[in-house]
Every structure is written in C-alpha cells, then in structure tokens.
Amino acid sequence: MSTKKPPEMASDLHRMNNKYSCRFAIKGEQFSCAWYPTMPSPERLLRIVETGKYHAARHIFLTEMAARIGGAVVCLEL
Image (tube, rainbow, N blue to C red; front, side, top):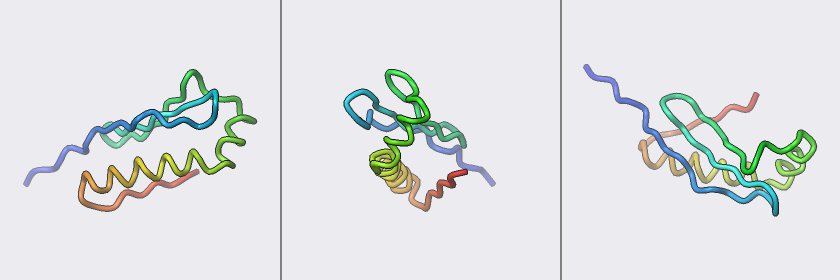
C-alpha cells in the first residue's frame, strides 16, 4: 500500500489593490499566502478582505488544486 505525496502548487500573483498582491501556495500539507511587496497592515488587510478580492483569488487557487488532485479541497478560516 502506497500513500500519495500531496501535490505542490503555487498560484499566479493576484493583485489586491494598487499597492498589494498575493500568491497562494501549497507544499505538502502546508497552505500559505505570501504578500508583495510586504504584508499589509491589519487595517489595510481588513479593507482588502472586505472587497472580496482575497477570497475570490483564494477560491480560484483552491478550485485549481481540487481539479489537479481530482477531489475536494476544504479551507477552514480560524
């Protein structure tokens, strides 16, 4: 019996506003989001999330991951 190694994948850069972009990645069982040029302040991050752009970009990445593995992908926000 063999176990499959989880796929590694990174998204394209997603523009969140005129200053910030982010890239999603999964390596092994670790899901991450890298911000460019740097992590926004909590106030700016809240504004970005409220526009819906962050969740839309994350949804695109997770949908691509589900298609790649041929199954469901679940992301829990804590």
